[in-house]
Image (tube, rainbow over all chains, first blue to last red):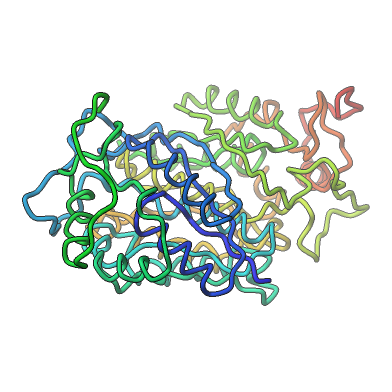
Length: 226
Length: 226
């Protein structure tokens, strides 16, 4: 069986990506990161989704003490818009986060002889995040090919971005067909016991389900510990 | 004053690179990694070198639980050759290590608005390690430019590899001119209280000093706790 490393945050996109990787016939190992994110609650969801999918997973921990993002620094507000359309790079952008995540995935893939990495970046992200754009993934592929033993020995590690050209509604429709357990997922940028329903990430999710004509299986509300 | 992030392992190359960065007029912040390396002793040296250079430093810790290198896995022998010339990729290669290190440096540089990253990779390394070759650094530069807010806003972060075309003897000569405290550095691939004097890394160092006509200021010998 072919092996793949799947970057799993516990949200809609990465959970759907995991189920897509499985549908491609890959035996998946999930990589979950505890990097000091404000929405640490997503790690609980990521673990649950990996378990439900019957996949191995490991949680890698590190700190990014330099901050530089509202996802890391509680002194910076999480953005809330009336419409979840972002033209500027939002404050939730974490400097070089996908490069860090992909570099760990690359290390894991090479050491475990996995032939592919899956990451759930997509169009709505890359309207805002530079490291979610096709040009970025093309550049990272060259790093993977030139900077690993696997790459220079002709065993180039594939990097799949199956959602890159999709929006949240497309993704939810694909995920429902693949039976992704969206009730276990977490999208909210804030921590807390319940998703806020107000941050950009919640709005993207809520609108996605609405446009797909499906009820979002999670309950929004006031958290005690935001 | 211009700011730079310097990747510092505590060996000859990265310590010399730090002093080169300083000589270029940069205020340097050193990034030191505790990644489960067998030669953890190098971290002590890296701290000492950063302090002696009068630079800030931080030690970032993470695990690479998948191993895949004799520097991570004590069940794999550290290579020892009669001559320190490597044609094959040695077992000390750590999958995607420089990509992980550079990605953290990139995050730090962007968050702290540093304009450059310095890394001490060089020719003897890239005879063996794929992620020490010019083609690799060129690829990583494209990742930095396309995958960061700084890069797409026209504040491209420079990546300096000032030793890339140098061998160990050249490096030592440059370092001596810059007063690099080689007595504080650690090159040995093995852990322990004293450098073994037998592994490839020790041999490269010993030969480098010999060819430079300078006495190596460290003492080799048997360690109690290898």
